[in-house]
Image 1: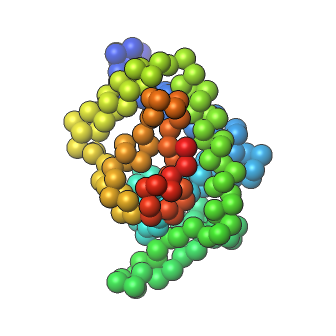
Image 2: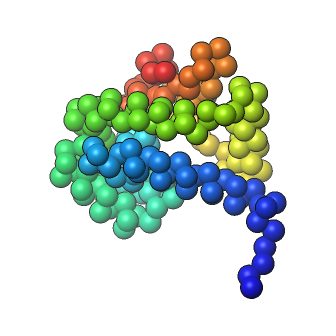
Length: 183
């Protein structure tokens, strides 16, 4: 028998919660014809504005070859466009299209709905403690999120829980002004 102290494993807790969130998102996105991976690419672009395929793959924890096929399907669906990087011809820069903006307007409420289900039995103080704990874990493991290229804000600042309004801000796809974030 493979034994491990799973009940005390922070990694297991986080992974289990992440898997449940991913399954819920997949189920909600399926009727729109959007995969979870495509949503993740759009979410990455929402935070960053654009990125090379390698940057997006790294940011999503995917192999570049896996992302290549996802990007190909998204390009055929006219959700993203590839442009040559002006500084390095070997790179393609991935940017969202106008159609992606429309799709994002449909999926952002889905994200909020799934998030609301996930946090429905957590108090504001529990949410704040969860956020702070995750930030400490990231810091301890040397994975502190770099600042957003577009806004100069950290990831935690881009997705802040507002204790006064019971909402979490979601950055607008491709926005460069922090005031343009939607709640």
